[in-house]
Figure 1 (cartoon, rainbow over the protein chains, first blue to last red):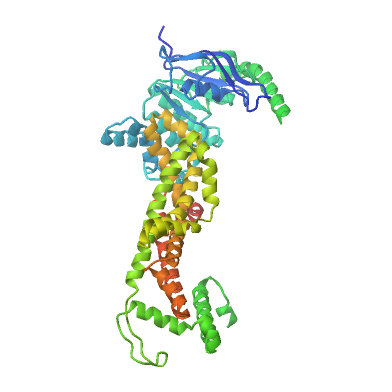
Figure 2: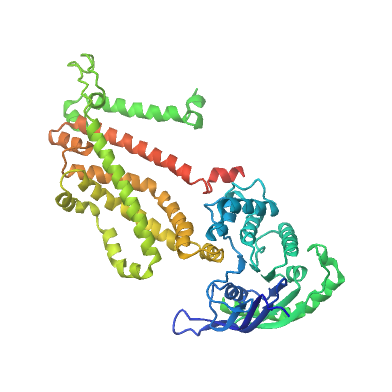
Amino acid sequence: MDTPALELCNISCTFRPRSPAEPAYTAVADTSLLVQPGEFVSVVGPTGCGKSTLLNVAAGLLTPSLGEVRVFGQVLQGINARAGYMFQTEALMPWRSALDNVLLGLQYHHTEAQAAQQLALDWLARVGLSGFEDRYPHQLSGGMRKRVALAQTLVLDPDIILMDEPFSALDIQTRQLMETEVLELWSRKKKAVLFITHDLDEAIAMSDRVVVLSAGPATHPIGEFQIDLPRPRHVAEVRSQARFNALHGQIWELLRDEVLKGYAQQLRKA
Amino acid sequence: MWSLIKPQESNLRWWQVGLLVAVLALWQWASTDPKLAFFLGNPVQVMGRVWSWFAPIDLPPNFFFPDGLKGRADIYIHLGVTLLETVLAFGLGTLLGLVCGLWLALSPLASAILDPYIKAANAMPRVILAPIFAMWFGLGIWSKVALAVTLVFFIVFFNVYQGVREVSPVLLANARMLGAKQKQLLRTVYLPSATSWVFSSLHTSVGLAFVGAVVGEYLGSARGVGYLIQQAEGTFDINTVFAGITILTTFALLLDGAVGRLERHLMVWQPRSAENERL
């Protein structure tokens, strides 16, 4: 068997309390997760369960309190240089045009200017934004900004792609379009993908495997499902298949209790 | 008839000009009383003063100026000095503010140590530093530049400091994930976002640079528009004082306009309300 692309081994993340009177908050407890090269893994869980924490650990933006991260067998220290990260919120630089935003990573890596320019133009075309190179982020729609962000991440050709609810802010039509596009880009060059979402439909439609997390605090995986729907998939059409509904029913049964728990906790906090 | 001259968008300019003419006429009428004229001056005399400052041409005796009007064209050196002080103070103050703001924002320890002193320095009415600067830098332009720099510095400094500390953490995380080293972060994230804050304070700081230069000249100098005004005040020459004020106001407006143009040119990436409406 290959070395896994990404391996989270017994990760725990405890955050120091803001005042000594409060107890320390454990967001993630003893979590292990494997992503094989070329595998598309989704992580679903109730809101506020620490999904993003897990992804930040995988990205190397956050050092876990316990446990370690391995990237292609190597223990991760500092930023995960083999991963690209697509954030949930706006991460484009407002003072750079679409093209300059895509060029950003290439400039950081000192790619030769002409080659970088060509690569960035190619990627903008691939995400359907030819002709929008000179637009600034505020001149683009939400969906177009996500496409720029996608090109910005993928232009560096990362071996691992981390996505944190990247489409949660989009309307449903744009979202399905983007999901289909991401699947298509992924299927051409199979990368390891760790996809975080709270939308079970999205998770099933896109993934090879869905991991269900428990409600926080001390989140940990409570179930794993292989998604054996045939590829290539069209995210809107796959939802009408019987197998999709069966899987959805199975996973939802597990997830529902956690969602209710998470909801009750949020009410208590409020 | 009224519907034609009623103030509205199309004839706004006429109303603005009309208001100016009305105020000048009222002023001229009031100045026919010599006692009032001593305090208020006389708009025609003020214009005459401006003429002889700028124009090298003598006017023959006429209705307004029975003795004729000498065209001395002697303001340029004074105006040049004041503008030079303003521009120098503006440049130096902005640069210093930018550098210090960046440094303190990126070094929490230094900012924690210096915090009370920065607060004190900002709370202090900095015009009181003028005598010290006059002692340190003499009566030439540098004491005025120093005074104006202290005014500009804090505006830019606080804007940059605040701006850098409010850089979106997601933007930073994204840049780091894309492979930015510390130096590249400074150049591609902190500096551009700080610059945008500098530009938002440009209008205020140009105005203050001007204030600093002129106040410095009031307090002791041998050249500059502030010096001219101060000299005229010493001889109760109220018309020259008003002429000086008129010129300073005009140039403040011109500087502000230039900054506005520069800002529009450099800040194309920022959304403007009109643009949002169009899209």
